[in-house]
Amino acid sequence: MSTNVNLDGTAYTIPAQGESAGWGTTLSSYLIALATSVGNRLRFDASQTLTGGQQTQARTNLGLAAGATAAFGHIAGSITEGNDVRITPSYTAPSGTVTLTSADARVQVMAPSANITVKLPASVYAAGDMFTIKNVSTTYTITLQASDASAITTIFDSCVDIASNSATTVANTAWAIVRRYPNPMAFEAYGQLSGITGPANMKYPSVRNDTHSSYNTSTGAITIKKNGYYNFAFFANTNVAGLVSISGTSATADNDRTIGYLNSTGGGSGNFKLAAGTYYLVLVSGTISATNNGNSFSMSCVGEY
Image: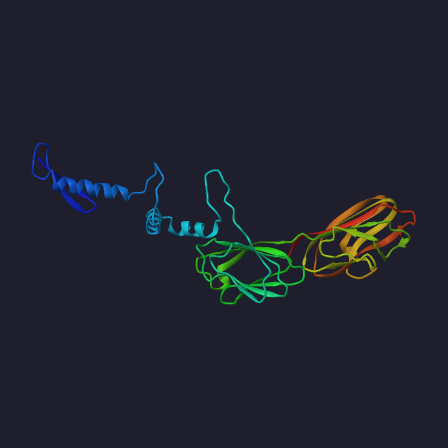
C-alpha cells in the first residue's frame, strides 16, 4: 500500500515495496525535495555557511533579532568560547555639537578644547541600553542633552553613566543617570613649616602629584574647580600644638571644618562638602615652632554633587 507524506507543504505518494508505479518520478521528486529541505535547516553538528538573509531569518526564528543586531553593532572582533568580549571605547577631541547614534560606541571619552554639547540618540536597541560619557578636560564642560535638545546634565572633569528607560529616547525623560563619578583629583603638599602662630595659613613649600594644579605654594591657596566631597589629611611629627581647619578665607579660622587638634605629634583628617572656590588650610590656634619638620598635607576628591 502506498504512503502519503507531506514535505514543506507538498504532498507525495510514496509507493509500497513491490509496486512499480511511482518508483521513478514520484520517489525521485520526494528525495530531491527532502535533500533540499534538510539543506535549509540550521546545523549544530558541523560548520555551515549562511547567506545574510538566512542569518537574519535564523535569528528571527530563534527570537534573537534585536539582541543579536545590537551585539554585532558593538562588539569589536569575533567572539569565541573562552575569550573575553571587549567593547572598544571612542576617544575624541570634539568641538561644537556632537550627535550620537545608536550605532556609536557606548563608551565615549572626550577631551574638548571648548565647551561643547553632546546629544544622545533618538532611539536605542532596548530599554536599559547605557552610555558612558567621560570628560577628561579640567577646563571645559560637556552639556549633555537628549536628541530634542532637552537638557540632562553638565559633565565637567568627570564621568557619567546614563541608561535609557525605553527604546525611544527623544526626550530627557527617557534617560536616567545611573552613576556620576569624578576624574581622579588629588595633590600632596609637604615640607617644613616653622614659626607659625594661629590663625595663619599653613603654606607648604613643595607639592607633588598635583593632578589639577590645585595647590599654590606661595599662598597656600587650594583651588577647587567643581562642587564635590573632599578628603583632607595632614601629618606633623614634631613640636606642633594647635587646631587645624579648612577655611574659605585666608588666615581665618573656620571651626565648622575642623580637621584635627595636634599636641606634639600626630595628624588628622576630615571629609567636607565644598562648592567650587578657593580654600586654605588654616592653623586656627596654637603654634608651629621653628624647629618643626616632616609635615605633609593631602587632598583628594571622593565624589561630586
